[in-house]
Length: 88
Image 1 (spheres, rainbow, N blue to C red):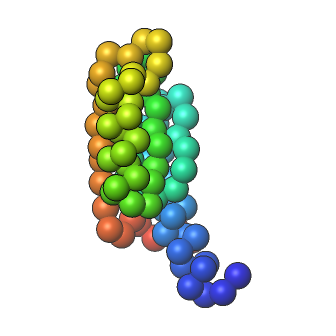
Image 2 (image 1 turned 90 degrees about the horizontal axis):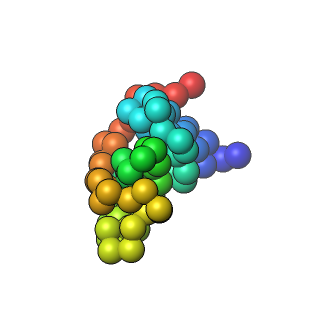
């Protein structure tokens, strides 16, 4: 893996680590990236995206269609930040 690819891999892994810390009770956390679409309906679920546009699109879909059978429309978009803590 080239140095730039390794750096990007560590940064993306850092976002997953931040998400696991923020939503430690999440049923699942999927994806990679700085932007999170989180749903708190029954159980907490989180999807991570590299771009804000992707995260906004997914949140708008679940806002309009529901995230599951127990949907209470408790969804949010979270920016995990530009530079997560360094991950070895």
